[in-house]
Amino acid sequence: MRKLEKIWIDGKLVAWDEARVHVLTHSLHYGMAAFEGIRCYKRADGRASIFRLRDHLDRLYDSCKIIAVQIPYTQEALAEVCLSVLRANNLLEAYLRPLVFLGDESMGIGATDLSTRVAVIAYEWGAYLGEEGLRRGIRAKVSSFSRYPVNAGMTMGKLTGQYINSILAKREALSLGFDEAIMLDVDGYVAEGSGQNVFIVRRGKLITPPPSAAILAGITRDSVMRMARDDGLEAVERVFSRDEMYIADEVFFAGTATEVTPVREVDGRTIGSGEPGPITKKLQQEYFEIVKGAKTRYPEWLTFL
Ligand code: PMP
Image (cartoon, rainbow, N blue to C red; front, side):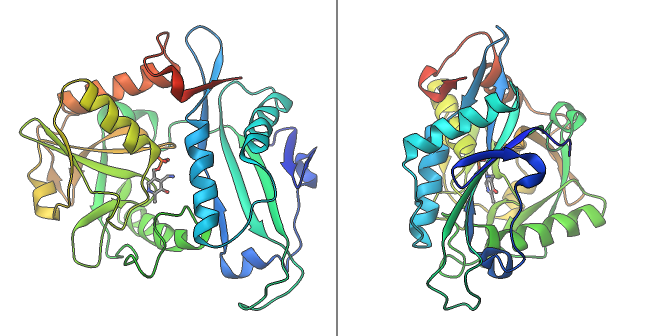
């Protein structure tokens, strides 16, 4: 990762190398922290806009509510911080990472006297699954690791500790020569990727697991559903099994980092023709137009720098 100028931590912009924590930092030991991943894009007209900043911050506050951690800043203040971190690093296009974590005052699972610390980092991040992946589609593998059952993981929260499950799945998929993992829930229904939501297209209909499934309710997922419905496409939220995914006409991933990435193969089965399908291509094109194109189809989703 290329080092940039400044990171915001606990109320101050500090030099990149000075944004350090003590090794006793509680969140480092037990994984109790919440975070977000947000993208800012340079648009075709030269301006820069953050995509769905308010929605990402809403989710950050929801994640903290789930783990009963109080963020010591207002949401408006944190939105302003996100803009200031981009400006301080002269970034028009970047990935923003707000992180809420617990301090180093005590150890132990039962510790209650911990400070709540907040950092906002901006860094450069290209196509998460590669430019070629965006264009041609990627190869995915159903993971041997299940998603947390809903009363074990708090999957509605974007919580750091839960990403052990994702990392194990992703590393397994990579070590077997695949690009990404598709994770099932404990009943065997398709849940999501290691860091992205999954969609299938069958007979012209778009299908994705419902928010009540063991998934993070992605903001890109929500954007795709809205775009598809506004295009007149039938888009439904329901569970589906891995065999229904094998016989889908199209499969794709959606996420902030992943953007809209076609999946051309799952577990060695070619999806559709093996090329990104027409609905995936259309939604991908529309997505990029919305996040960085000349026309702003959903102006309420953009925060200009
Ligand atoms: N699921 C998981 C597990 C994720 O980490 C992400 C990325 N935040 C997503 C889905 C997609 O969410 P979003 O579109 O809000 O980035």
